[in-house]
Amino acid sequence: MRTSVAIIGAGPAGMFLAHLLAAEGIDAIVIERRDRAYVEGRVRAGVLEQVTTDLMHRLGLGERLDREGLVHGGTQISLDGSLFRIDMAELTGGSAVTVYGQQEVMHDLFEAAPARGLRIEWNAEDVTLEGLDTDAPVVRWHKDGEAHELRCDFVAGCDGYHGVSRASIPADVLRTFERVYPFGWLGILADVPPADHELIYANHERGFALASMRSATRSRYYIQCGLDESIEDWPDERFWDELCLRIGPEAASRVTRGASFEKSIAPLRSFVSEPMRWGRLFLAGDAAHIVPPTGAKGMNLAVSDVMFLGEALVEHYRGGSQAGLDGYSTRALARVWKAERFSWWFTSITHRFPEMDGFARRIQAAELDYIRGSRAAQRTLAENYVGLPMGTA
Ligand code: FAD
Ligand code: DHB
Image (cartoon, rainbow, N blue to C red; front, side, top):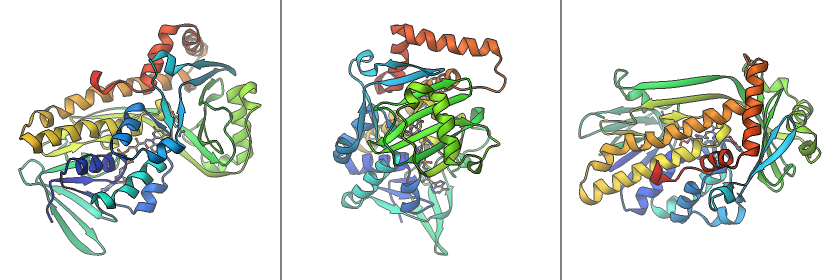
């Protein structure tokens, strides 16, 4: 088999890139380790930046998003139970975020794929990448016991944090930067109306909590938990009690309790690997970087990476210029590091850290109180939260 661009991984990065290339008539094949049901079933991100919704519209994938997505022009912050609002739309000249789950995004990307001639090789086992530093890379894998081979011009490594792409770059080329946080997020989904029509990010002495949603009848809630805890430690009633304590009495009075149908713990990590290109391999999304979920940036960053990469590949195939491909890593990393900074900062002012003493706690409270009272501080938060424009990346 031969194609122009071999895309490893059918997550948001891989599938958005496949659609971007198909729209420009560039040949690509996506190679995915799991099956569609698995990729679509993973409960992950929930908040889309304007950049992401704009791209969905540009690709003709905005129809259900327009119908079902919840546009949020503001968000609530709670400090020890006292709520204040950040009017993101007003502070940013009209920008907003849209609540539309990653599962819905993946569904739309997969549904539109066949009609656009997008090819996805599912259940590809033991994927290996060869000849990445030559003009003729080769991707090999097994499926149902049979060996497969794909020759290509370029490989897009969109296979997430645990994928094969980053691991194929020689260790002496890669530099990695990391912070591992001493806590995780315990998240639940329940078919109950959300506590508020906007999200509530809560800093409480007992730890962080987040009230989010998927629709007017489906809530998504998170609480900070210890890394040694398991979901068995958290029966629904204990979860609801703790959530209500942390978001405070005013918001808690609007919480509808119910049985959760999903419950999982995710560790928090900041991670960046540089460069994002080696030879003919280009990394995008979680394959190159991880953010703690607090800023809701993970999936949005995967999308902005492949927008840069898609542009560079189009420039190459249209006019033969290498400039975009040569500049990809620098351009993408400039935006990535700003999102890393924001996600790290927002995590640091909203979570309880084990080593936190009275001084550190009061500094945190003072910072949130400063945001409550300062339009300048609110604006800084708002413009990062809705997503920095691609142009100033
Ligand atoms: P992925 O979504 O990881 O997709 C990579 C794809 O590559 C997968 O389909 C995988 O099966 C495939 N793959 C892996 N290895 C191979 C291989 N060797 N060969 C072939 N295919 C391979 N972000 C938020 O903004 N908010 C959240 O609440 C949030 N929650 C999260 C919870 C969890 C548990 C995780 C892991 C992430 C969460 N994120 C969240 C982050 C967000 O979901 C990711 O940033 C986003 O999925 C990144 O997209 P991606 O396409 O780069 O990677
Ligand atoms: C959701 C996840 C986030 O990480 C976040 O910051 C906001 C919302 C969510 O899953 O709804």
